[in-house]
Structures are given as C-alpha cells and as structure tokens.
Length: 87
Ligand code: SF4
Ligand code: SF4
Image (cartoon, rainbow, N blue to C red):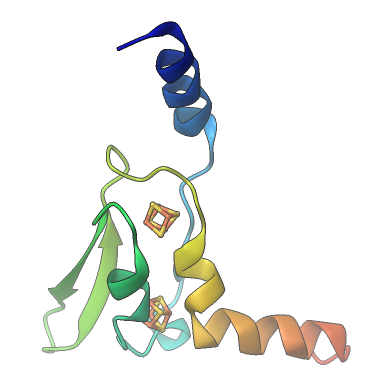
C-alpha cells in the first residue's frame, strides 16, 4: 500500500457511516441500498417477524452514501422537508 492509498483509506474511514433507518417504519426492506453498495458493505437480515432490514458493516463501508441516495424513503422525507411538511 503506497502513501496516497493510506491517506485515502484514512479519509474514507473518517466518513460517517450512514443511518439507513431509525424506526422500522422508515424502511420497507426493498434492498435497493443493498443492491447499489459498491463494496458489499450491506447485508439484509430478517427480524423476528420475518421482515428484511439492511445492516451495514462499518469496516467495509467507504462512506459513498449511494445507499442513502437510492432509498425511496429518504427521498420522500427530503421532498416533504422541502415542502415544509416534515415534523
Ligand atoms: S433502500 Fe431504504 S427502504 Fe430500501 S431496504 Fe434500504 S433503507 Fe430500507
Ligand atoms: S455509504 Fe456506500 S459503502 Fe457505505 S453502506 Fe452505503 S453504499 Fe455501501
């Protein structure tokens, strides 16, 4: 590993791991985030009721936020916020 890649690696580590959902109602388990992650840092796991939810491996995540951009729930929240409808 050369110096540049060590610095890049370090900068990537400093990036914040995205929060895909805080409440289960903020995620429908569509797996879009899982599918788009370029480094396979997300896996889908069943909860106790048999619904799938994404989990991020923070050691693999490079903080590219593609998962947040692709998530329909996050887009909807952003749109509501812009229209002044967010609580
Ligand atoms: S893209 Fe959004 S709604 Fe779909 S599984 Fe990921 S976090 Fe849940
Ligand atoms: S931020 Fe990028 S690397 Fe991290 S989980 Fe989301 S898509 Fe994967």
